[in-house]
Amino acid sequence: MYTLQCVECGKENKETNYNCECGSLLEVRFDFDEVSVDFKLDGRDLRVWKYRSLLPVKSDPVTLKEGGTPLYRLERLEKELGIRRIYVKHEGLNPSGSFKDRGMTVGITKALEFRKKAVACASTGNTSASMAMYAAKAGLKAFVLLPAGKVALGKVAQALMHGADVIGIKGNFDDALRIVREVCDKADIYLLNSVNPYRLEGQKTIAFEIVDELGVPDAVLLPVGNAGNISAIYKGFKEFKELGLIERIPRMIGIQAEGASPIYKAFKEGRREITPFANPETIATAIRIGNPVNAKKALRAIYESKGLAEIVSDEEIVSAQKILAKNGIGVEPASASSVAGLIKLAKMGKIDRDSTVVCVATGNLLKDPETVIKVCGEPKIVDAEIEKVMALVT
Ligand code: F0G
Image 1 (cartoon, rainbow, N blue to C red):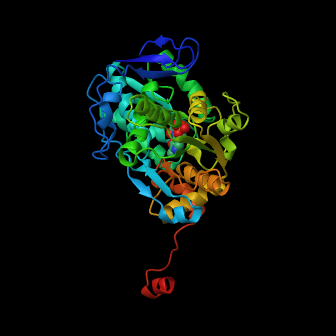
Image 2: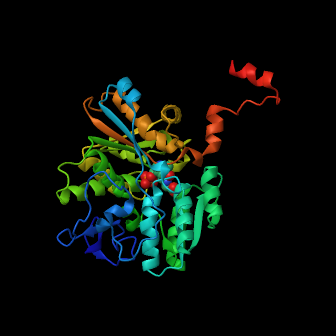
């Protein structure tokens, strides 16, 4: 019903491979003649496993009830930017607080199907938190490699508490990913970074849920780091189109932090390959990535959907994080870059005024309390006296 195929040479690969012999990325391809779609696009009962008939598993899934995240409308921002409809899909409300859970529910299920005893990933934080949680649920051993000192505290706390072995690497995310890929090969550990094609299958349900609840928007904006999510969401829309469930695909708009923007740079130059950034830097540590492994898939998604890539500064990210917070939506910095990108692009006239756009907010505010204190300041402290407090509230 499904096979693993190379995105470049088209060769069918073993279902446990992460890369083709030719070195390129793999993706899951369904034979749609054999798939019977058993869900209704009625906006009800949204969750990852509603779409099981389009997910590549053969066994009962390891699930923590992921997906079904709310879509909020931002009426004030619509007026301010003069755009007809702006929605935010709050992926920070998944079980571990990020969209990674959609991928992990599938990835960990595959780890069990392949009879693996241990799983591993390199991470800027969220992947490790999510993997630790799902590995715990499945009873698998988990190893995570983090860029030491560059991961938001909440994410490290999650990985530790859910029982992963947490290893800090004196290097950046790209170094950690290079190392973990080799370690997984040598030690027969299942790799759960987004080079794992099954993980991306889970993440494509973001597209399915958007269509299910809203129909097809004109554009979807999201932060881009290792570039798995934009590739996954595009694949989701493409599959719905191939199945005849929708007639068009939204523009995929990837937003990167200025200091970590190899995909933006390639897009600006009209190229399909990136030149890595050796020393990526941004306040949005989740997307502090210089050599995204899924760059080719992401650029294909952007070009094929007539989308684009844009960069935002740390100041623009923090400002968008505050705008979201004022609308009752608490997100971590990387997540806010989608809205920061929308604001920038709208002001540049690059978003059609009559359009419906969805910004994906990828991770929860609670993930990164340290940045909040830096940008909002410490709480006021006073003596335990009514007068002292009265002086502050009047
Ligand atoms: N937003 C958040 C909050 C993330 O944690 C990530 C990636 C992204 C956006 C970008 O997604 O990599 O698919 O382009 N975090 C990874 C991690 C790298 O290790 O948690 P992407």
